[in-house]
Structure formats: C-alpha cells, structure tokens
Image (cartoon, rainbow, N blue to C red; front, side, top):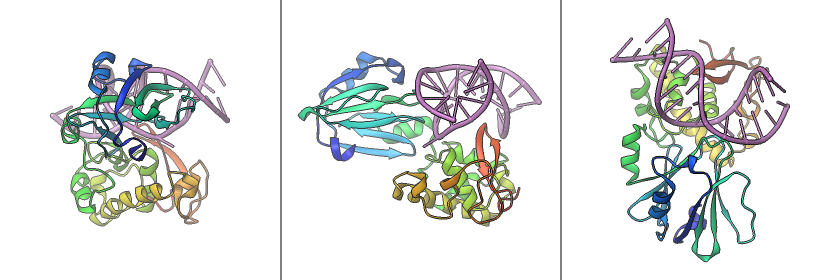
Length: 247
DNA sequence: GAGTATGTTATATG
DNA sequence: GCATATAACATACT
C-alpha cells in the first residue's frame, strides 16, 4: 500500500457501507480525506495509519479485511466497503466480508495508541518489557497475549505458536511462570511474527517445527511428542501439545 | 441448521 | 474492584 499510494492525492471517497466507519459519519469522513495527499504509512500492532499530512486515516482489518490497490480495469472486490480514488487513476479498495474491521480518523499515532490504551508493538517489544508487563497477572497467559493493552499485535494463531515455542500451556496463569519461561515467551513473540512476515503470512511457508504449519485437532506435535489438543482459553480455540506444554 | 473461523468491545456473571 | 465469560457485530464455509 505504501509503495502503491505514497505521494498520491485522494480525489474521491466512496463509502459503500457506513457501518465500517468508526466514530464519524460518511460526510465528515469523506470531507476529512478528500484533497489530501498520502505522505506515509505507519503501524502499531494490528492498527494501520495513513498519514495525510496533519491527520491520520486509521485502518483495522479485523479478521477478514484487506486493502487492495486496484488497476484501472481491475474489478472491485466483492465485499468492498469503501473506495478511495487517487490521482493517476489508481483506486484503493477496503474489502471486508465480515466487517469486523474499521476505518476512522485520528490526530496522531501516539494519541490513538494512548486513547485505546494499546500496549507496546509486539514486533518491537523487548523480552524484559514483556516480562514486566505480564509477570504479575493471574490471568491465563494466552489471554494476556491476546489483550492488546498488554501487547499490541498478537492474534490467536501467533499466540498459540509463541506458547508452543516457549513450551508453555495456554491456560497457565502468568504469575505462576518462572522468569525464565516468561522471558522465553517474550523472545518467541517477535521471532514468530518475523517468521510469519518472512513467510508472506502463508502458514505452509513457515519454518519446519512450527505448530501453525499443521494446526488442527490430533495433528502431530512438530517435536514428535504425541499430538495436539484443543481447548478454549479466553473464548478462543487454542491448540497446544499436552506433552511439551505442561500446565 | 449447527458449528466453526487469523478480532474487538460492551455487558454480564462470579 | 477484579477476572472471566458471553454476546454482538456479518459472512463464508464445512
């Protein structure tokens, strides 16, 4: 998106379904964006920001959202909820079947992060900082990983992977874990995310030994320690190896 | 029709 | 007050 759109001017805004707008209505959203140029793009956790010089367009993809630059003849995706027309004939589609994502406007990245109480970015966080933010909680460690106020950017799948790599049972209360264990988890988080990026987010392209390459009930443990089990933690399906991730 | 799904948040319950 | 659980959002798929 940055490559395709940086330097372009927004010449038209079409909101096809107003329900994806967060905190403002169609007319003010369009007015805020129209005529502005895309200066830069930023990210904090799962939240995306498009710097329009003075204001930020905020984008969250939810579970099924996608931002797609479209060529002049290219078809608009089926569940496009908003369409930005850029100069030079380029269009940018926000496609989101389940509409769990959202578009909005914010004054700055810092302000947005503060307002939402988002934790540090999971890709950049140090193991020490992760440990200090999670060590004293009685909550299940997986619920902490998914709590964007503790750490911003880890979702259900990558939480499972990081816990597997650190050999931690997903429902362990984090305060019962040794400093060493928590530190191993803190180191696993950015490593897992980097691997996923390197794999183009295709789970089958992840390195050997990753649980996510075959995450399903009864799938073999990549370490050869039996097979995976599924439980619910924090309402989310959680796959783990009962043999190497002991409670 | 039931149940599931890579997310977040408001409300309910213990 | 705290933590956890559930519902809600909307669509696709098995």
